[in-house]
Image 1 (cartoon, rainbow, N blue to C red):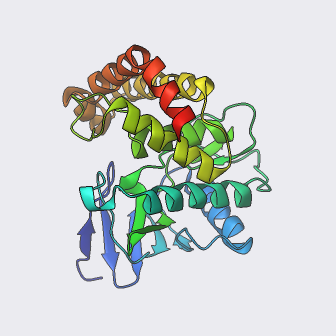
Image 2 (image 1 turned 30 degrees about the horizontal axis):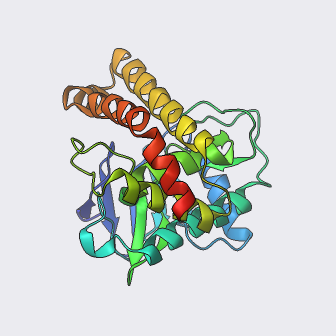
Length: 255
C-alpha cells in the first residue's frame, strides 16, 4: 500500500487512502465497529462506516469536510452550535438500543445509568464541518455506555466553551459562554441548569484521573499531555466554573 495522507489523529497516527481511513486498532475496536454499524442501520449517517479490522488497523470510510482543533471565529455561530447539539442527540438516540455484550471492551469505563453509548470525546476536533454545519462525528475510541448528560456536559464544555481565559481555546465572557451553553442544551432537548455545571466539573475530574492513571501505566501520549499542561488547564477550568457559577446560571436563564 502506498503511503497515505497523515491526518491529525490525537493519540493515534491516522492515514487517509482515498475514501478510506486507516487507524490503529484497539481492544475496543470490535465493539466500536458493532456500534457504528448499529447506529448507521438506524439512520444515523453522521459517523464513518466500518469496513474491517485486522491485527493492527481498523478501516473506515472517510467523512468529507473540515475538522478544527478549536472553532475559528467564523464558525462560532448559533447555526453550528445547534447542528453539533442535534447531531449528538441523533447519535445518542440511535445508540440507545445498542446491546452491549460480555466480551465488549471499552477504553473508558461504563457509567451508570447506561442510557446511551457516549461518544466520549464530542468536541470540535472530532466533528466534521461542511458549510458551517456539523455533519459528522469521528474518532469513537472513547465511546462507552453512560448517561446522556455525561456526554452532553463535555460537549458543552468544548463548544460553549466553558474555559477560563488562560485556556488557549477559550473565547467569550462568562455570560456569552453561559448563553452558548444554554443554546446547545436547548438544541439537544434538555435544560441548562446547575446540574450541568456540576457534571462538567465531574467530567473534567474524571478526565484528569484517567490521564494520570494512563500515564502511570506508561502511556507516553498521556504523559506528554500532562507534561504539556493539559491537566493543569482542566483544573483551572474547574476553578473557573466555580468562580463564575452565578454568572453562568444567570446567563442560562437569558438564552
